[in-house]
Length: 475
Image 1 (cartoon, rainbow, N blue to C red):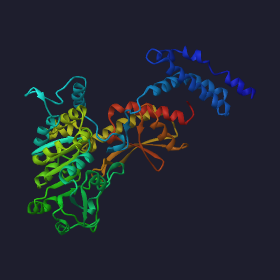
Image 2: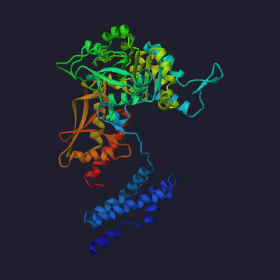
Image 3: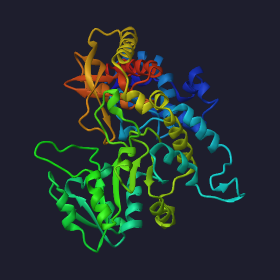
């Protein structure tokens, strides 16, 4: 106990720490209460470690050197935003948990200009009176897709609900059982349909649906045929489905609108870049689909939005639906989506400047170069004999419920520890001021270069160095 008292005496007083140069600098740009709180908490951590016998005199003296910096980190974390930048080292390009698609910097410049100024959000400049916010995107969407008309709501589930509420409320909608998918957050197509007021009529089986299944289900209560693209899974083996172009004859014969939920919203043929074929919005419209819905923040590579494109007569009805008010998008989404769509006017520009498309189409040479650069930085920064760093071949994923069976060859820098659990390092990286999200497999940490930017490498190196010191007990 007396020994503990001696150790407690080595801890500096609160006022002395507040007069430390590093801590004093914090007071220039932080509230004093936050800085004092950070000092007290770090001191209390030291006291607790002494009380439990974790600290020796030598360890405490070593901690004294780092204490001001630990106070700084703690105080800064108290003022940091809850929603923060993270580094995606997982290799999942459209990572739903990490914000899905990244926005191009030029696009964000447009958002900044609109957000920090007044705008013609609902003002018709040509007529000098109130206008519609939906008019800003209609021309660019129809130009790219070839649809007659278009509108945008806040996400694709809202788009599907609005379409069905407008076209099929209290009437029947025929859909294949094999297309009754569950989307993110446990939301399911049948539940979305129920909320829209439409009556679900499921035909066929999970693995097989035939043309005649649809035809037999049509009656005087049928309001629409619905196709749902299974973008987040694939049924293989003894399976078959009816393509949208095959349903065109039923649409024509019975004068029933044909709706397709494409989900991912791809606007380019990605197969020419080595990826699997994914039906484009243009394909659906060319196949006679009356209304197509898709996401703005998946393969399209823009902000979260639900885009509806197709026959003008139906979309004009949707604009008058009371749900439209609840689902409408704000000026941030509109400005970001318009700027993103303009990049699609030239395919090469879209591939180069839309981060999602750029990451998906990165070639082997570019990924190798990034891997070697990160490897060399880490080898220089992390000089521990029990930390192994390697470059290995692996696979990235598209993510976001898109191209589910696609495997993209990639390079990863791996880290393994001889004496410590890799999960402890993974946990520390998640708790950094700029979290680094990795994947762990068989006691190896994988840093996938496909989803990492070169200007993040120094942050990754510093974060790994700091986290290794923490789990080794140096800090």
